[in-house]
Every structure is written in structure tokens, then in C-alpha cells.
Amino acid sequence: MTKRLTTIGTVFLLTTSLSIGQVGFEIGKSSDTYVKQIIQYKVESYYSAQGTKSVKMSWDVKYNDGEISDVIYCSENQYHLDLKMIANFCTHYMMASGKLAYVLTQYENVSTDKLKSSYDNKYGDRKIGDKYFDEDYLNYSQVYLATNGYPTVEYKKTETYELPSDIKKKIEDKQKEQVVLEMIKKEAEETEKKKEKEIKSKLYDLEKYDKTQYFEAVNKQRDNLISCLQSISKSSGNPYSSYSSSVQFIPSFTELEKADKKYFIFKNSYTAYYYLKDNSTDGKNYGTYIVSGTRDIKKYAKFTLVSGEDKNCILLNNCYISIPTIKYEGYEVMTEATIKNIVVDYIKGVTTVKIKNGTVTYKKNPPPTEYQTLLSDKLKNEPKGGLYIVKYEVGKVMDKSFANTETKKTKSTGKKILRTTGIILLIAGALIFY
Image 1 (cartoon, rainbow, N blue to C red):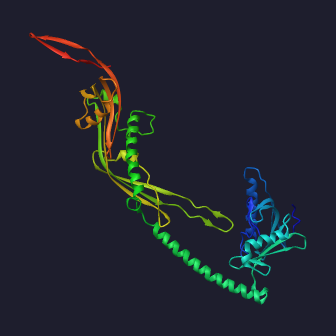
Image 2 (cartoon, one colour):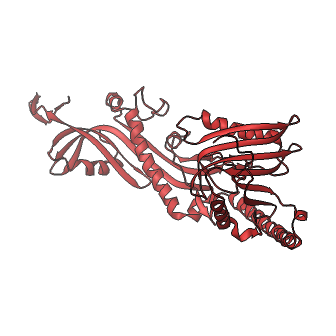
Image 3 (cartoon, rainbow, N blue to C red):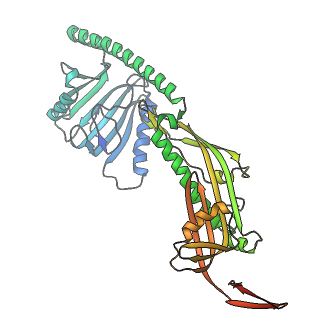
């Protein structure tokens, strides 16, 4: 399709699909240079993007006495949403005194009847005479066969003085009605925005407004702490761990085996406070282009040590969770959550035990009594009895117990007899550990 089409029209949508009634510039206000820059940018951006281009686009500018009189945009093989077909067309943005005066679109492969049928379907309820009016009745389109033989859509501003008196009265009544409707709509939108702003300005206590998600957060905090404790334990002494050395506060089993005290206890109680802050931005519609909004919800946490020695709350600062937003009166709102009674009672150590008929007897380096029941319950199911060296981690986090053990069977030296001052002492079970 060449630029032999001397007039062009209503449509401005530089994508691979098109809908009627889309101009993109405001008649009587858009400047000629602005229209030229936007069309040039759109066409050049389309071809600079990577990928196969099935739609062919071009643009041109005509001048009259040194001023822009016509900005031309042509397209081939562009899908037309309302016509439901591939269309070839050219659009002329006709200028006067540096402003957009009116717009013409002419089609190469679409009949006049097809255009009228599409406009009847789309704008039939706002058709007066042969004119199809926009919702505000400030602009209208006309469909006709131009003198050059091309089906044409002309889009221009409504000038009531140019219209017959009966049509003029209808238009003026419609415009007045539209003004009232716009005022009502604007007031409703402002009321809704005020309500939305007020609702969104608050933090909503998750425990109060969504108990299900609150208890899910509590359980998530508990399980995350157990998993985190075990991960920190495994990382101890590993220079390649994702945890820094300051976080690796739990000694390794190798360190415990060499130490005088064969176990390490971590017992602390905390309160955690989580909250969200919305730093998102709204999108903006500039008419010819839309700037997308951004979603930016920041997550914050504050931890307090209630009892224990973890003064810097190292554990929680490395094992925190995220809390969700919730819906309140149809809006997504920010939440806060306070989790109390985060009690962490953990021990890691090495001991020697004898297991016989499901009974566990601590022979060497026993853990404190309060941890023995939990560890014994884990060990008593060892399939074979005997003497074992046990590496263990047991504890309770927020009333959930856990126990991990690694056992290694060992041997005794049998029996030794000591003779002293005529008394024979029988010592059984002197052990060799290896």
C-alpha cells in the first residue's frame, strides 16, 4: 500500500491489533510537532524491536508554507479487532494553526458497507443522522466513500452550529446529560478514592482480621526456626556456608568431642513483630501512552529477647518469616503480626549410652536430665542393643519437639581384675572408644 491515499482517519493504535474509534490525540489541543514525534517514535520503535514483523508500517509529513499540515501513518496487515480482519489503511492527522484539526482514515481492502456495519454495532446507540458520537458527544465519526474511491472514516470535533436545529438540540441535551453524569461519576470516584486511601492507610492486625493466616504464620515461624537451627548446626565451622561466622554460634560435633563439656545448650524466649509497608506507585495514562505502576511492598521485623542470652536476637534475625497482605472491604491492605512465646530450647551433644531391651542407660557424658526423656525415646528403638556413641540434637520450639541422632556402636574391653591388699575388685565395662 503506497501513500497515494491522500486522506486518512480515525484509528491510532500502533500494535499488531486495532480497534475502531481510537485516535490517541485530542482534537483542537494536540500540537503538530507532538503528533509527528509520537508517530515517528512508534513506527521506529516497532522496527527496532527484535523479532519478525508481520505488520508493515510507514509514516510521512507534509508541509504547507513551512508548517506541518498533515502527519501520515500507514499500516499493512494490521489486525482490526472490530472488523475481525486484516486491514490495510492510512491515517492523516490534519493540522491547522499548529493543532490537530481533524483525522481521516481510509481503507484499501475494507468496503464502506463493512465500515458502516461495524460502526452501527459499536456506536449505534449514539448515532444521530449519519454521525457516530463519542460517549461525551464532543467528537463524532462519519463513514463515507471519498471522491478518491476509498472507504473513509472522518473524525472531528462536534460544532453544534454546523448541525441542523433538531440535531443540535439533541446534541446539546446529550452533552448536558453527559456533564451531569460525568460530575456524578467524578464524585463517586473521589468518594471511592477517599475511602480506599483511608482503608489502605492503616495496618491490620493479622490475628484479628484473618486468624487462619495468623496461625499459619505462627506455624511457619516455628517450623522455620527448627529448620534454621539444624541448618546453622550443620554449617558450624564451614567457611563456605551461606551463614556468616557470627551466625554459626552452635559448635560442631568435632568441637564438642574435644571440649570438656560434651554438650551445648541454647535456651531463649522471644517476641517477634512483623509489619508491611506499601511503597507501590500507581500507573498513569497520558493518552498516547501508559506508564505502568510498580508493586513494592516492603517487609519489616522487630525482635525482642524476653529471656536468655541471645541479646542480639541472632537466631530470629536469620530465621524470620514473611507475613501476607489480606483483603479488607475489597482492598488489598498491609498487615502486622505479633508472635509471642517463641520459646527455643535446644541442646546438641555427644554421649555414650547402653541400649538393652528398649531401655537406655547413659554411661558417659549424659545430657541434663530434662533432655534425657526426649533423647531416650529416640534411641530406644535402635534395632540392636549394645553400647553406642551418640551424636544428638534435640529440643523443643514453641511446644514442637524434635530429635536427631547419629549412632555408632562401640565395644567394651571385657573384664579386668585388680588385686590390692588382698581384696579382688572386679571392674566390668572399662571402655575403649574409637
